[in-house]
Length: 478
Image (cartoon, rainbow, N blue to C red; front, side, top):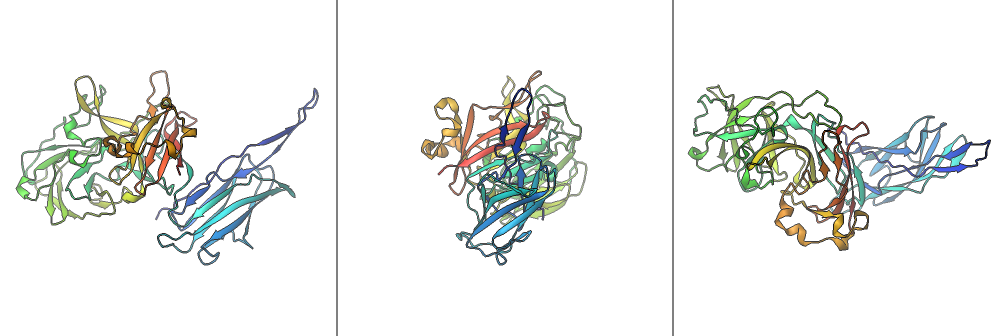
């Protein structure tokens, strides 16, 4: 199991004490440290916790943390490394380091509704025998799903080749990266029998007028996502991709019928692998080599799916049963592993997905399929709802409170569209301009548990002007 490493960090103001004259410009500085967020929810049994210094340390020393508990006992429900003595942890650090850390070990898991947490407070920082006052900052570590009050997130998309989709859960702060090419088909867990394509790698599909999987199928190169004037298909047929809104009735493949003879064979364009060629600053190179083609047919098997698949020229085929799992929006299948794979988190455990995306756009002659980068999908199927707020509406992000929330916007049809945020949060850049965020807007998001957050985007590129490096911040409204 991959460790979920949560970095808790922030910079506090550096205090300068300066005495300057014509012949004396010496300055003395005081270092400090603090936690970034007032609370975190544990998502792993062992969680490294970092305390970050404002500046690299000039000498070796220690950070002293005090802890207080609610509903838990040290040594029974949790412990730390280094160990606490009389509810105090001493963290030694060396000279010229930017952080120091301890490990929080969760030994028990709470039942639903139990309140169990530990609050750590930075008491002091000492170096060379001199105690330097630290900003009085604390972090509350929650054993259960206590919604975070504020948080800052930098999803690990992986830079301008955007190798990952990243799922973010606002209440816990958990961020889950998933390799874009790790899955191909998603089998819907709801009452309908519907199957979706991996739009992050530009998959496309076309229904054929046959039901025989042993029949050789001819590749049709028009079954592809459009490129908008670039190489390949200029205007991709929108009917070959899933409806961008996420409406499950608008999948490119028809609903699976209970009558086998009505379930046709499909030609599937597997899209593209990941590129390793780094693009110019401000650009994205998301797609590598073509992944080829498959033919598939999907049937019902009681309350499960039956997937038949083969290469287009094959006269035999493989078959696998795929079971619905109500804890997830979809069950995912990979042609690479020839098996069900883990991709999306459970539907109650994510709100936003940062991803490459196949959208519809108008090139002047009607809607066509088109690939978008820096795209954000909301978990509409899992109950997440969102709407956009423009600063021009009268209330800026900092002043926006729960009283400013328009509840009816969560019930409007637009709120159930998974592309409410989409690409609306950013500018794509141009020949002489770098891509950037749109700082004239923010978003209000309600998760399936009813928690309401305000969310604004801080960046979409890093200091080297590389895309695939977004960040955002949010606060719980209460």
